[in-house]
Every structure is written in structure tokens, then in C-alpha cells.
Length: 272
Image 1 (cartoon, rainbow, N blue to C red):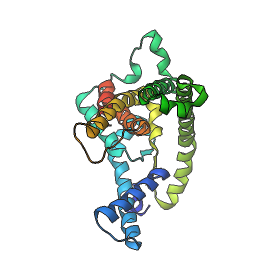
Image 2 (image 1 turned 180 degrees about the vertical axis):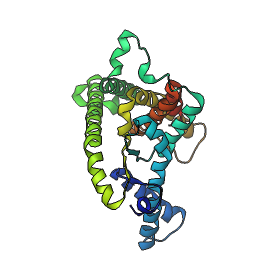
Image 3 (image 1 turned 30 degrees about the vertical axis):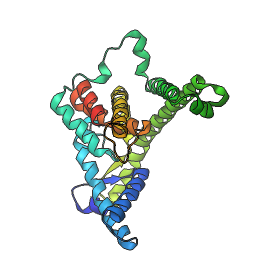
Image 4 (image 1 turned 120 degrees about the vertical axis):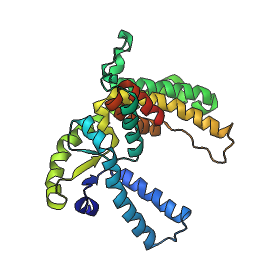
């Protein structure tokens, strides 16, 4: 709030769980990488660094955010700000924003994928089903029980799709109600400040681009995991995760689409 008050970067980071995640991460860095002893200095140094970092992160993406949202007066506050900025930047250089993913003509059989809830549910079902078969019967039997691997994977997919639907409904409510309420708050403490919101706020502007970014990013993540575990013989392996690719590559693809159309969305997914 102090940084937003006294500098030109008038953005307030309102994504609480990411704030907490960043605080944990910076504590580990200060203690393990820099050797700072536990105590008040970790708290003070970490807190000041985060207080400076978060408005700057929002400011980095804000030019693309304003274009995407038609100057809706909201910022993008997440741990994927740099990736999202890269998606917008590279889409601008190599794509054409007139060729949006949302305008792509799909075959009749694929028209159902226009609905983000259904599309997410079906693709998550396919991912869970294939991965379960690869894992083997001893693993999926323990998880699926009497349901069987097909029905268990289908239920997981449908739950994920329903969860995305609830998430998007919440985002719409958040934007409708929070922004006017925040205006009253900012007039008192930080005049002209913009609220920084969680990454799903951009999904409503290009759900097809988001899904495309995830579908491109996830297989690349699997390949990189296998490379680390096999050919590169790394001591530590970063195991790819569905949630990380969904909420990491999705926004990068949305920003890429806003500046470079479907080509920007594809490049955003690769970057993610």
C-alpha cells in the first residue's frame, strides 16, 4: 500500500493465496540461498521485497491487461505475471490479433468445445483416463475402487469442469462487486489505485485460448519431466502438474491471443 501510495505504480495485490505462496518462497530463498538466520530480519527484508515486487509485477502486465479488458480498471496479480507478459509480448511480435482463437471455425462435431465447462471436463477426463492406464491396474484400482477406471476418470473430469464453471461465475461476481467497493477504499488510502486480481479473471475474455494454451503446455511439461528423469540424469526432477499448466499456460495464451491471435495463443502455451 505504501509503494502504491508514493510511487506511480498504483496497484494493490489482492490475490491472497499467491501473496502467501510468495512469502513462503522468499523466506526459503533468504534463509537457504542467502544464509540469513531465522528471525525478525527475514520477516522485514522479505516483507519489504514483496511489498515492492507485487505492484511492479502488476505494472509489467498492465499495458496488455488494459488492451485485453478494454480498460476495465483491473490489474493482473498472480505468480505468472512474467509468463503472461511474455505471451503478450511474443504474440505482438509474431502473430495477428485479428485472427483470434475465439473466432476459429470449428467442425460441427467440435462445436461443443466452445463451452469451457464441457471442454475442460472432457479433456481432464481423457488425461486422467490415459494416465491411469499408464500407471497400471494396481494404482488405479486403489484410487477408483469399485467405480472402475473409466467411471472414476469421468467423474474427476466432470468435477473439474464444474469447478471451472463455479470459478468463472465467482470471477464475474468479483469484478462486478469488488471493483466498485475497491474504488471507495482506494479514494481514502491510495487514490487512483487499481485492484490486482487472480488469474481466472482473464479466462472469461478468451476461454478457447486458455484451453489451447493448456493443451499445448501440458504435453511439453511431460516431455521435459521425462528428459530430466532420463536423458539428462538430473539429481532433482520437476514433475509436471495439471493445475500448474492450467493456471500457468492458460493466462499466457490469453494474453498471447489478445496481441497475436491464435499464433500468439500457441506461443503463449509453449512459453507456459
